[in-house]
Amino acid sequence: KGPKLHAVTTERYNGYLEGIKEAGFKFDKRYIFDGDFALNSGREAVRHFLSLNDRPDAIVASTDLMAIGALKELNRNSVKVPEEIKVVGFDNIPMAELMQPTLTTIAQPIIELGVNAAELLIKKIENPETSNQQIVMQCTLIERESSI
Image 1 (tube, rainbow, N blue to C red):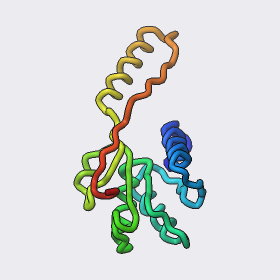
Image 2 (cartoon, rainbow, N blue to C red):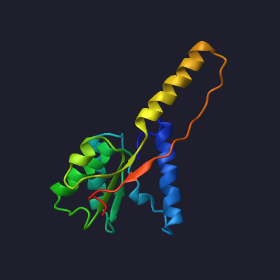
Image 3 (tube, one colour):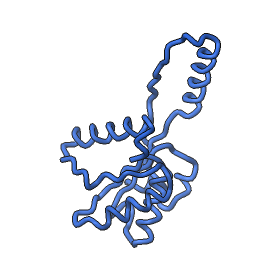
């Protein structure tokens, strides 16, 4: 997970919980690691997961940077990805495709997100009484080597 102060952390975490439930898995809080969206928290998460008696067979990270940190730490510990542990990130940053193995990720429509944010900001500047809006956009799973 990312920092609790970010709304996106809660949204991604709730999506994870919903996915666990839909897949018929039992939730176990030992498999949740509070991170900070950065590379090092992915490394720390892997250290935590590898210390468990029943280590996970997959890691879903809140950001690609966390997932890349996880990949690096798994490699450092000679854990084979995806054979032993699969890894998925979120953001589809350019580095995701350069990793070995390449990182499976959830892509956001970044350009559309920026355009919508700018339009909403302009409306708010032009009319400060404009009510706040929430826009939900579709994300896309980009399957690569780290989870296949």
